[in-house]
Amino acid sequence: MQTERRRETRHTSDPGWRRLGVAAAATMATWSVALQVVAGTVIPPVAAVGIAFALLATLVGRMTRTWVAVAAAVIPLLALAGNLPPIVHDLSHPEEAVVFTLTVVSVVGALLTSLAGFMLWFRRGGSATPAAVVGTGAVVVSAIVGFVASSGVESAEAAAGDVVVETRSVQFAPTEIVFTIDATGVWVDNADPFPHTFTIEGTGIDLGVPGYSAQRVDVDLDPGTYLVICAVPGHEAMTATLVVEG
Image (cartoon, rainbow, N blue to C red; front, side, top):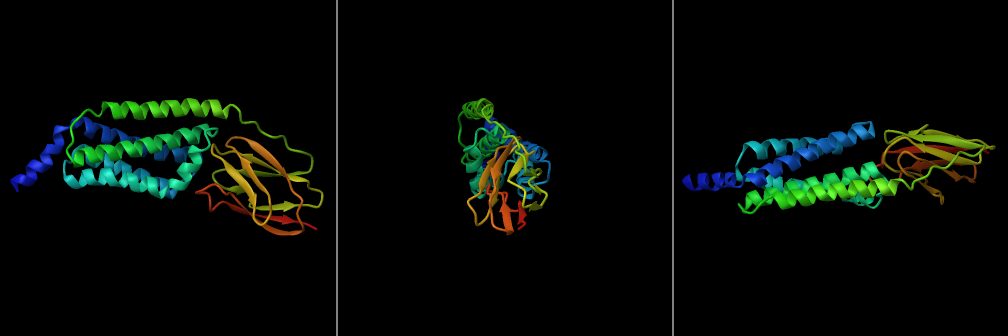
C-alpha cells in the first residue's frame, strides 16, 4: 500500500508536465467546439473527441493515479490514428487557412497531451516549457502559411446556362440537381470554410471547390441519373443525385 502511494504521489513532483497536459487537453476540447462552430453543424466524431479530451483535462488536473497518465498518453494517439485520412488531407491543403490551422492545432494538442501523459506515466523530469514553445510556434507558423496560401485562391464566375449548387454544413443543396437540355455546366458555391469536391461517379468529373469559393465545370453527359459525392475524407455522407434530362 505504501509503495503504491509513493508511486502515485511521485506524479505530483512534476507540475510542469501536468499543467501542459491539462492545457493541451483543454485546447483539444476547445478545438472540437471551434471546428463544429465553423462547420455550422454537429459532427459526432469530433464532438466525441472533444468530450474525451475535456474529461482528460479534468482528470489530469485533479488526479495523480497512474491510469490517468496512461489514458492521457494513449487516447490522443488513438484519436490521431483514427482520423489520419482527413488529417493528412487537411494538412496537404494549406490554402484552406481556417481548417489547415485548426488541424495543426488538433495535431499539436493531441501530441502534447500524449507527451505529457508519457512523462507523468514514467515519472520523467525535465522542463515542459520547450515542448510548449515548439507546439505554440507550430500553430503560429501554420496560421501564417495558411493566410499566405489562401490569398491565392480565386473563384470562378458562373456562365450562362450553369446550374447552381451550394455546399453548406457538409451538404449539397439541392440534393436533387436537375440538368436540363439547355444547361451547359454546374457552378458550385462553397459556403463552408473547408474544401469539398463535386464528383460525379462513373464520369471524369471531379471538381475541387476550396472553402469560401465558387468553381464551375462543364457537364456533357448522356441522359440519366448520376450519383454526386464529395470525395474529401470524412464527407462520405455528403451525396446528391444529378438528373440529366434528354
